Length: 272
Image 1 (cartoon, helix red, strand yellow):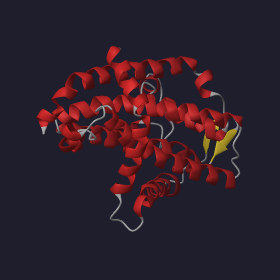
Image 2 (tube, rainbow, N blue to C red):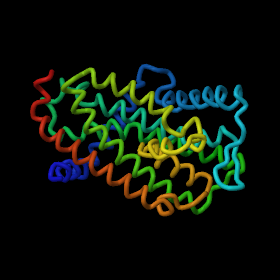
Image 3 (cartoon, one colour):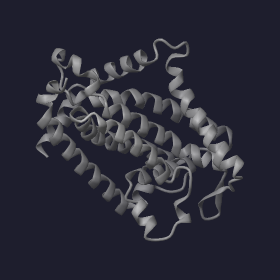
């Protein structure tokens, strides 16, 4: 836990730097493109349309029952979860390679190395906020008006950020030591997309598969986002046992990731 406190303290003390570096990261990534950072929004929107066309249109997916007596078209059900998935996927991928891709500049740095995964994640956080805003507009125009339950979206955004940062600390350390780890993470995340209730309902399964799949912390976040958008309930309160499990897992991952990072960061330059 000592390492975790060290890492958290470094994030707080360098928060202004994280925001500046994340904005620079976002701008420099697409500086040679005419549309620039707009591609960060265009790409996920195209993906959403493709998934809707394949899973919702061609297969003629019926409306999804999100609560007893309440059904919604598949496209809105998909949209409520996919914006979270896009943030999780992109931020995790960038976070995992954030350190080894910047080994050349490590000797010139005058800020803690734990800041590097965080500003990589933050660069995607801005995109997530834009996607969130677009989704809110779509829901409003379509008649799915926001309710008081939408307030919990801020809690789930924070929870998502904590989970991604904890994972990034682990993966960025292992990826620096063993480069193949990054490719493995990429493959695993693509599999996680289909093991999470993003494109299909978990209720079509039977126990114990449902309970096993709920061990995936993304399930908690996805259902929380949907509860916020569709005004279903205070998900993190109604499912308080799941909330305790989620934060217990985040604390374990953060403690382990912080320990690894603090232990190996003095030697990162050796892997150049």
